[in-house]
Length: 607
Image (cartoon, rainbow, N blue to C red; front, top):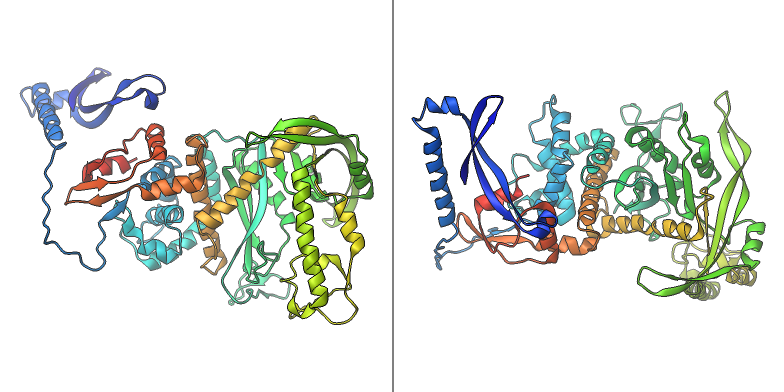
């Protein structure tokens, strides 16, 4: 520590500074010594009233403090071998959460909650509860009770609120979750440049471990109401097409990410609603509240509808802004007769390309620009919706993969074998357990209440359907509004959709966001607000680390970065790896000390 005089506008002030060496890798190519302000001592003229020679006095004080700090580098720890542990004692604390806390503070979420609760009469610290829920979702995922009971796992003492306060805080999180999505987007641009040239959209669902769907109550006009008769929302927890064919009620999520896979915004909707209707509202919200720039939306074939194409092809264009665009997967087996004939007509171009694993593969492809006729819903002047035929130019690309052909053939063989067994033993199957095999059986139907196969007409294997499907094994099609995009770009842009699928996997596996343990719509919204924030933070960290490490590996490193308390002020670390070394460079902090004082760790955790 040393004394520094700084004169500004004719006024001299004294400061305590510290200097530390920063190696070349950390400072971007050059080794250098960096200065850090420790304390402002005040105006020199004012200090002269207290000390005859302030400069000499504080210079001596700085020297004494520096010597004391050097002395602290060597300490003797006394161990009493007769000390016993009591039930519940835990002297191991996680410090890895500090990296996530840094990103949390860079997103200024502490300021967000200070602004939103400034005039609210609440007895608990809203920001502290939200931060605990986000950090717990990342490092120790579980229920809200789990988060509260595990709060002592962190080095910094978290207290001042009860479990009831945590549940009350969920209502506030729900109230501001839409504003928070916008806030996070704006601040994240200061951490990582968001690439909005392409936006990926997909839907998934999360199950509830409950026996039946929630029932809605409606008034005479058909509006949902609560028990008191007040207007409310349709309840989320409904049975629908769960991805793993579970019978439990679900809530569905539509998620939008930028080109790099960092979440932009999300929306929730009841489990029995169609995902096809929820792309347009979230795009509208992002363009009106986040950034009104042209976006090419990439989505899977389930969202490839006439209304969505019409919307992105120009019906959502305002003023002089250019229309948005789309890249969709295209179902071949469900396409028009003309499209199927074109797929099988030959004239493919064959090239060799290198895949992500560095392997050379044969890319057999062709494309065309084709006028596509859409039947879209258009709102008339009287507010009523009517069907209208619209024609748009669309680039259509189809490619063939031998690997994909083998996979489709094998999948169909499994389904057909199950269909054959179902025909012989229909009592052994129901609507869920037949899992797609029913598509290859003629005359099959299921009881609506039990799901069992209905007795009646003879069940017959649909050989014609099997042979028709086999013609298109290995073919995949992508369509786009971007007529100048070449076949390779179409393929690469569409393949980027795997990033959002990976994000869903992180949410469900690494963050254990299902089953959902809360029940009301507001608390479900709040639950996913913390999950969304956790996803943004982990994706930002992954990007800052150069996308070199999978999320699971990053989480394991930071979960293992713990310290053990040796005495009142001394702690020992026992884990360090290349990810923590990379975090040192990116955040300018030291993480490889084997021993540290309490004050050192607190300084590291302080933003």
